[in-house]
Image 1 (cartoon, rainbow, N blue to C red):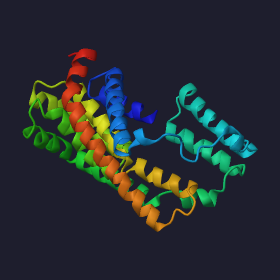
Image 2: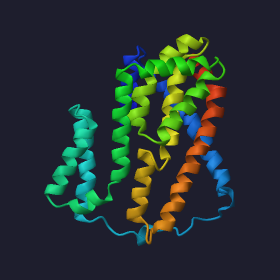
Image 3: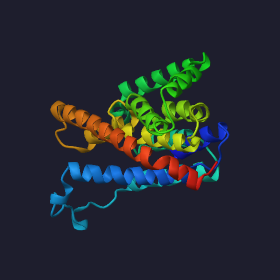
Image 4: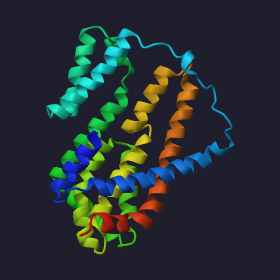
Length: 272
């Protein structure tokens, strides 16, 4: 997936290879805890049977256009894995071909895109690129490390990444910006594994990414708008607030789990 490619590239640029096994263990643990917390919050234990459950008999058969669209995903994966094509370029190529052969309605596709969020993410990405060019990232690393200790560094990085992900893209902004910072901060703080900091950044960016002001949350709202009947303004506002709540819960989970386990996992799996 693109997340793994970006994190792997950022870590290798910082001089750390093969970090994905450590990050995967940390991600699995945090996601499991997050799922349990949401299960309790939404009282999933009270659910006796599925609500509005569908049987296979109720499902319509795939149409020809739907089958071709699914094959487009396969073609995109072949381009990505077999020919090392950039995932964004592969997606654009497949999408363009599908539109050219009238598999999808180009007007409806364009209208369904969350343009406001896209422009915001691009703007934040451009701004952070300027900040990095003028030395702002190094200044930020020094400022963050000055208020950290070896016990608070990992959860602090997770929360920082999560807060940044609330209003920007984890892929385009958080990971490329904060992954390289992890090495400098670990060196300045001392007693903390830089890979644990990278794990905190990766997971903080992903769990908080369901914010409606981030890419994940924007895609959720777009999906609800196209697949939910009578998705009016009141329902949009309700889901907008709910997504912020989910992000806040995710940040709390990151603080607790990362403080307890990430440095131990990084030392055990990756070592130093």
